[in-house]
Image (cartoon, rainbow, N blue to C red):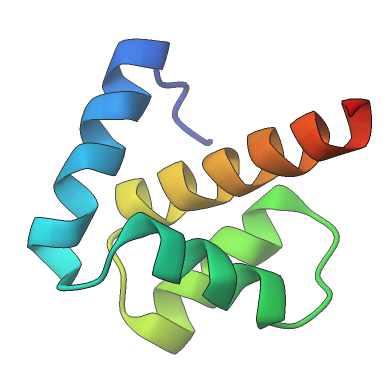
Length: 76
């Protein structure tokens, strides 16, 4: 079962990613964008975890942020 994070927890998780991974969030989002064309949220999270050795929470936060930004682009 996937965890549901509050907006504050999501922002805190994103803020910690550069320290924990050595890469900026923007770099990770570009990696997701250039990665395989996976459809399901959990497939994307699993790919990040296994391909890039990320913790579940970090991978989930990155995919959530990626989806939020993609949706925002569609609205413009």
